[in-house]
Length: 487
Image 1 (tube, rainbow, N blue to C red):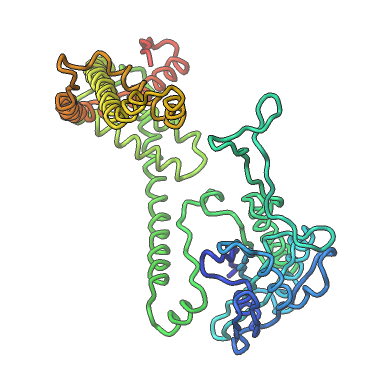
Image 2: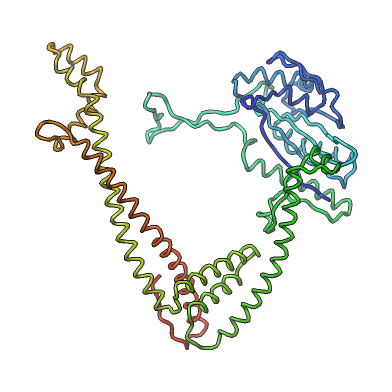
């Protein structure tokens, strides 16, 4: 069965990873790291088929040697948290021969990576013979090469400029900027193009061999398939499952397959229900005074007529059931009863919202007063110390040294001017007590407000559905008179 798996991650020092160790593991070699002063030996690793380094035209030829290449990269990357390389993990196809898979992998690396100036160290793996799982790995340095073969920069600065073209400075006097990548290799668009290109290569090979199977780089959701994708198991999990040892991933995939089967069954039931709804619509098409249930039924049929997927139809049906149950529970059978209930709830919600807004405003005022009182008490000694200095020069020097604190003090004194009691104190305890009272009142008001708001939201949604149905009836049957309701 054709399989699509295309995963790209980064080799990062911040994750405790090494470019040399990663390259040694993927190529099944023994490599020495000059950066860490240690050897990574994977020369006994099984399942290695082929490894190769492909270089762009501007790369030094010595980089064709794996140890030289990755030691050169490790040396140029000085940051302890450096991002070192892109790591590709791509599934090959069991429908192709080993030679065909190798040729496809090499073609992809050459056309999609090396042609863009990337160095590509790739290795073909076939870990076991009992369960076929051919795949290949690619390591590509994130840092690009310059035309002269020297390592370039991964990012460059784009400074923020004002209207006059001058650099904008931050509070520390340093120019602000954005760090912009020098390549698009790490962009979502580039990853998407790689994934699409690999699917196209495999599908062209399927067609060439006269096979009906195809792979798609898009997710089920993007393909419009209302199924849950299985997770990638990997060779270790497959080996355990083949020996009868259950695994978490295996159990999850079995559950996903069972759920997908249930979804397919549910689709058939939905189709039957939709057919029934069409019959109901035909019966209701005769001139008669519509009730809310009928209008909601009209709305769901109309919505499903324009739906592109079963998933959308299922969502519409769920919305209809919720709305219908709601009007039945609240005994709302006519358009007039719906409008009266909307008007009543809207008035209650508006009043409670006004109360909470006023409470929030007062709490913000109290919070600001308490903050200013704290600033006043903390900074007044500085103000008093300045006024105690007799010599003008020394006093001016002290003022300049404490200018920021003094500005805060003056602002606090200004805002608190009318708050001082006759004995020169601030009613801080009273403010805090008022804050607590306001918080309790707000919580109580919100407890009343939320269910009313939720009810109003549901009612407004029902009213929207009803209005759409009423307008549609007026268009389809102008003889029937229907009142217009403001949305």
